[in-house]
Image (cartoon, rainbow, N blue to C red; front, top):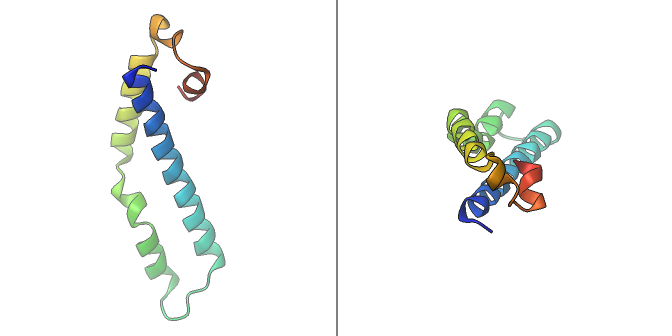
Length: 86
C-alpha cells in the first residue's frame, strides 16, 4: 500500500468517526431530556467538536486526496477499499 493510500484511508476513518459521533449526539439530543440545564446549553456543549472542524478544510483535504489518487496509473494500483472510498 502506498503512503498516500494509507493516509487517505486513515482520513476516511477519521471522517467516519466524526459522522458517527455527530449522529449519536443528534440522537441523544432528540431523546434525552436534561433535568437542570436547557436543551440549548446541552446542544451547545455537544456540538463543540463539530464546530471545531472546518468544513472548508475538510473539502480541501478531500479534494487533494482525490487529485492524487485519480490519475489512471495510480487508481489502477489501489486496493478495492480505497477505490470505493475515492
